[in-house]
Image 1: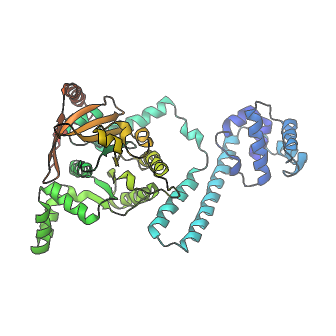
Image 2 (image 1 turned 60 degrees about the vertical axis):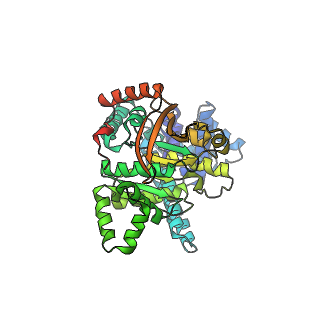
Image 3 (image 1 turned 180 degrees about the horizontal axis):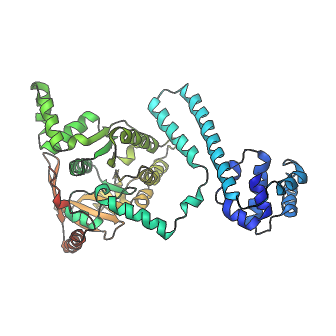
Length: 444
């Protein structure tokens, strides 16, 4: 009543304060919600809001009787002495509206819990619903930032960036892309058999060692037992059959292995191997990981094509939804997110990898801040190509040296003169302090 009364007293000033803050659904009283909606419509049409125009608007809509008639609207004019406090009144309405939505959501969660068969899915959906309920109230005023406010945010961002930014650990590549910052997404695309899963595991293990932070790996394709074996293979440079034999035949081998993995920092790789995860479930598990292990260095997902999306059966719709929401995931969690994707058959047949080659949907390219591709040249050399780079140069190729018996990526160096030139420029950025030099790190 106070908000609508203030609008009638001083329409221009009051609407400037509340139009972006309140939705009609935020009002508990149905009549007040209808009046406020009519006020928004008059303001949109640039019609002066007063007792006459508002009454006429409601009468034309056939809703005047529903709100209590002209007498109720006249009563609102006298309800507040001034419009000066309209922002405070709007804040109270918003708080109560959010509380009501949370209560309603909690009731729905309670009802679904009685018949839930999958408790992990129940928790993931419950967290998403509660977050939606808490965030559905408009807070547009807080989304408008002055340059001074942005400067404060940016200074904090830059101070934390060396630690928070995810780098591959290969200087020539990192100098060009400058690393994946919290809230950004890097897609890595390749056809089957080109070591993309091994590459993701290599760079996550290196990052665990380098930063001493836990990194979360969603292995949607491989079971946890295989991920553990591969971690031993990559980090310890050990044949997998020897790892298997050691655990099978040698007492104490498991403890020795864990001691070695801890020295290498590989014990900080946290793995979830649940199949067919949705983006909402990944966020749920990531929040659990943050609560249990503290700050996360990055989230890696292997791979996008195997992720699920509730209610979407067509591959294009499912992959589009997951790709678009991966960016929201990175921003909400405030961590770098690295996702593997497959390339389409046409690109695989032609031996070409471009940003548009990712299988399933163009949303993959659109949602990525960075894209890397793995491919073979005519001599069967393994190459890494920068397909998209938010920080500058793209379409650069690098030659990959991989020790296949250990799935160990040894080096990634410029493939041609163009890549050499841009890598030198990237190293110059590093020397000037744009990002910490990956060569300072000893991966193992």
